[in-house]
Image: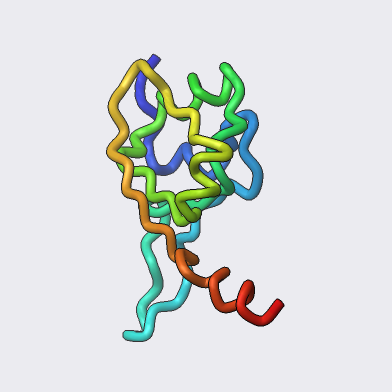
Length: 105
């Protein structure tokens, strides 16, 4: 099986993911748009099925950025293909956001 090219990816939804899509075409502050076939978004990859793992492994995606908090990552770790290395970046954008909410309760 060969790696899926960027043009193949918009139709790809790895089994077990939700809301997986190419976010190309979004406007930038410069007036340009983001390129298609470069950046994809999805929910957590913790529910990938065996088929979904194969589908993800067959793509040319190289980096997974996880925006969940450390607690969310611990509760539902991503399932990534063992057959190839994907660079992972942990970037919990809501880290500390719940602290203010807890103080108000």
